[in-house]
Structures are given as structure tokens and as C-alpha cells.
Image (cartoon, each protein chain N blue to C red):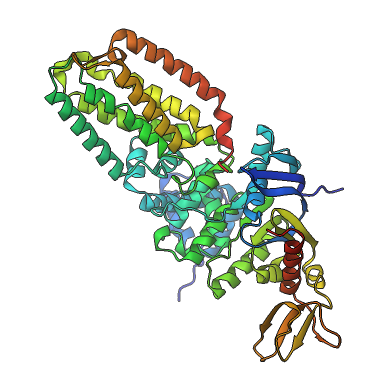
Length: 278
Length: 287
């Protein structure tokens, strides 16, 4: 067994603790301290902040490894895209953001775009424009609520505002479905700009659904809004020309006004999300 | 003078034509209080009101010095509340660490380092240090309950509400869970809902019995047993006058009710007192 007889002089240890030791002395001190318990203790006494910072770095490394190892694919993608880690975790707990949902949305859009392509004698791609606004509506309905989110009750009584959590999830659902729907729109170039006329109705249906949710719950609200959309569409469509006023510029202006009204209504009822369904 | 953690008076809640809670008044202070009652008695409804999940139709409630009817009061209560619902849901794809971390984010612990430190602390408290990286779907029912308890203990809540946490656990898991709950009651207010008298006997300093939406008893576990004082006796055969009777392991019958003259009286248990209370309530208010 060897005994270390030499110890780092006080002034060198102080310089090292202050981060002022030049490289050769720094390396020598580090090498010695790693093998000498007495100098480690002296260093810890002389520079408690240095030791605390080292522990903090170790903690952060352990946490990062643990967190990264457990992240699912969605959370990993979100963090890589620059989403903050706590927001990514909130989104990873969104029941609807799963591969099965994206597959269902993709398939529905493909079928709707296919139907619109077959009916290209029409003035507007009605099958596509009728179905596309319903997708974010369904997504929102199954994002948060009793019977949908297994941790709904925990989220409800947590200090984070339920409305904020809902908006974060809705934003994620709307963003993903919008990207997929916009991609599907590219498959119908023959119709021109009218192919984008699903966007405002999609916003409107989602906002109306959210505004009704505190009173009716997400699923009943979504069903009611979906039925309302169907009735509205059927009552405005002209089957001989395949034209609906909803997708004409004037109709879109009315829908835009509806979006503003629904948004204001939603802000007004936002506190209703803070209490649970009985 | 210290104020009670929870002061409720006249809490009433109706589901359509059914009255789930009927003018309930309770006070809670430090230590573990057991809320005992049969299924459908109104336990979960009362707990959900105290946890700010739903608002009562009528009545006054002050929790941790706040009025949960106002948004600010509700938020203040939620910041100091730990809640384990009757059927705590999980995101099964999360690990134990990730799940508790998710709840910590909901509890506004945003700084990652401080949050992770807190998650490790509470998982350590419930003895899950070694299972932090195990996915929820791979954990047993008892271990999941411990994960849910860890989530409820985040941020050191002053009021801890546990809704039937021992349901579905095997005897050993139940024993371990009771140990944990007893430890949680030191220095904070714990309300433990259960329909098992053993839970009350082993961990509670106070007990509240609720049945058909009304409070039937409030006092110490010993006081609940004393309700049946002089009304429990043993006999070689089943006594016809007994409200309830069962054969014990020794072959004699244990009877509860009005004893016949000369009956061999025996000291009552909490269970005896509880059965008599429920029976008296049923007699007064037949279904």
C-alpha cells in the first residue's frame, strides 16, 4: 500500500478552487486530488460552491440520460424540434397523438381526395372540403376529457390551468392535421385555391366544440358540432353544380366572422374547464 | 389559534334526482382521518368536492384557509393538495419516473433540475428508487398505486386526499401501503376513504362514517367500537335476535344486536360499531 506524503499547498489549492490555476498546475492538482482524500476534504471546505456545482452537473447528466432513455418517439421528435422538455412531456401524454391517429387521418384524407378527384367536374372538391374540417374536431374531442385522458382527474385538480393544457393539446392536434390536410390538398391542383377552403371551417368547428365542452363534455360537443356542420353543408350545397356558398369568398368571410365570435365565446367560458364533469 | 385544514358545513350535491351528499358538515385537521362507508355512500363525491374536482350545489367550504369557489382560492388549494383518485389513470407507455414527472409538470414544477430532484425524492419515499425506469404497463397493481401515491406527494402537500387506495391490493401490498399512509400523516392532513375497517383500525386517528350521503359518525376509532358496547355477544348457536351473526374460527357465533338476558358479552370491534351504525341508518331511512 502506498501512502501519499505530499499535499497540494494551500495557495495552489485556493487558486484551483478559484479557477485561476494555469493548465499544468490545474492538471497536477486534479490528478492529486482524485487520489488524496485529505486534499479532497480541504478543497471541499475551501470551495463548497465548486463541489455543489459538480454535483449539479452530475445530477443534470443523470437526469438527461434517464429522461432521454425513457422518451417515446413523439417526445424525442418534439424535443429535437426545439419544444421545451416539459411541453414535450405534456404533448406526449395526449391520447390522440399516436401513430394510429395519424394513419387514420392520412387514410381519411386520401379517400376524400380520391373522391374529389373522381368528381372533378364539380366546381369545388366537396368530399374533401366536407371531411377535412371534421378531422381536427375529432382530434380535439379525443385529446382531453373524462373517459378520454386516463389522467384527466389528476390534471383537473392540478394547479396548471386545465384550459392551458387543453389549448396546448389542441394546438398540437390542429398543427398536425393541418400539415397532413395541406399535403393532401396538393393532390387536387386542378381546383385552384378553393381547395384550401377547409381551413376556416376547421377552425370554426374546433372553436365551437371547445366552447360547448364545459357544458356538454368533449364527445357530445363534437358530435353536435359535426351534425351541425353536416346540416349546414347539405343546406348550402347545390348538387347540380357542386358549389357551396360556404366555400365561396362571401361564405368564407361569414365563416371567418364565426371564428372570431367562437373564439370570444371560448375565452368567456374558459373558467368552465376548471371543474370536472359530475 | 390554529385553523382546521378543512371546514365544511352543509355540503349538498345532487345527481339529477339522487342526493349524493345531504348537508354534510366535517372538519379535518392534522393526522389521518378515515372516511368509512359502503359503496355508493357518497365518499367519492365528498372527496372530489374537497379536492376541487367538482363544486357542491350548496354549502360552505374552507380548505387550507381558502374558499375554493373563487378561481384564486381554488388555485391556492390546488397548489397545496395531493390527490389520489379512486381509479388513478396512467399513461402506460410512460415509465414510473416519466409519469410522476408529468404530474410534477401539471403541478407547475417547470425547472427541470428541481423537478427531477423532487420526482426522485417522492419515488424514494414510496420505495420505488429501483423501479424508476420501469414502464407503468409492466408494474403490478400495488406498485402502480405507489407510483400514484408518489405523484400525490409531489411538492409536499398540506392536504392529502386518498380515495380507496387499498382496493385491489393483496394483503401484503395493503400492509405496506398502510405503512406509507401512516407515515404520510405525520405533519399533514390525510383523508383516507375506504370501506375496509382494518384500514381505519391500523392508520387512522379519527374516523368519519358516511352512509346514504349523510355523516353518521365522527370520532376516534375507539369511539366507533364503543357504539357497539354491550351489543356484541358470543353463543354456541346463531342467535335469532341478532342483526348480524357469523361463526368465528373457534366454532362459536359472534352476534351483534340486542343481546338476550345472560348473554356472554364480548368487547366490540370497530367493525361491530360500523355495522350497527349502518343498520340503524337503514332502519331510520329505508331505501
